[in-house]
Image (tube, rainbow, N blue to C red):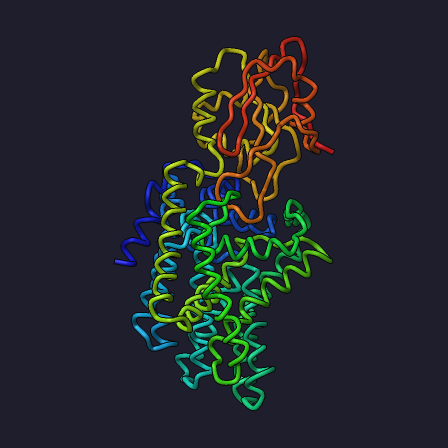
Length: 490
């Protein structure tokens, strides 16, 4: 029942919402030849390839099929979570509660409905943690070592943040398992083997002449962001405070505080909780410090590797409470997650960028001589997914340089036909590091360092219509009498 409910939430209207910009990259990569796919991935530089290689095993003919691998990975993640708790704790009831927490966890649900790598990251991070804990608990067969090495290698080839897993594992050897030198040496050898594919990938990136690594949008975090991360990863942060979210956060808190305290206090005899403790502290702590003093990298979706640790620390903390209170807290968190998901489905706030609705509006209101103005190549690719008349390209202008990782996307050629009205597409420039769904509203005339913003500001008195969609604002601007050509932003 838990698996069915979890899979249902991940599949519900999976293909009805528009792809958002990051998913458009996935769509371009899946439709490209294998050589172009690898070139785009290396040019992009932000993603390691395993998830996208697996995606290429599935047919790509619709939005639903593009997202379907992630939904399957989300289902597998729930099964792995149940199996992990059953094997490590030997408690079937606890395993089922852990599975229910994940099945109704909004953070995991949203990334299981997205054509990105995060649901698979959870699977391999949980498996690597499971086999590591089995090793430190004494189960050191060749089969376990092989499974640990393979799952670790897969995790590293799924997301860069997975390399923080061995840092948390090392803490146990440094503070608790000091006398297990032979096991440490074996663990070190396993990590070297597991890390070889990742090192080869890094070497291939270092040879790229035009490596993009587009992470400049990430802001520097504050200490309050750590609280918002816990909020988001347990009961869903939407930028507003709902009553069920407050109830869920209280229930999470009454489990997390004793869970953390117990893991620290009993670290000598409770290796499992001590490992979960450090699997939470290391990613958040190191990334937070690096983001404050070096370069911002703090984004909630990158922390998928610590979700098993967070949920299990909360769950074991509830076990320290009176039995009925712990059960009530678990029910509250599951219901709070279900309420958050239902609200997002009902209000449509889980759709990040409504490119389909925007394209439909242009299609219905289009007149001869109309053109389209975009800010980036990826915005143009997203628009053309839902606008089937490619003749519009003869009337399309583009601000900005081509985006990295978009080889094979439509390229605009000069000269282009003159236009009298310009449909101007302004994609929401706000990228909240916590929210998964629609971003906060923005003022398109607020001075911003974007070509679209400046262009619109200079033509306020010539705006004929304005339409607001999730993540995208559309303007119809009178441009008769003026040439509008594609420009490259400085």
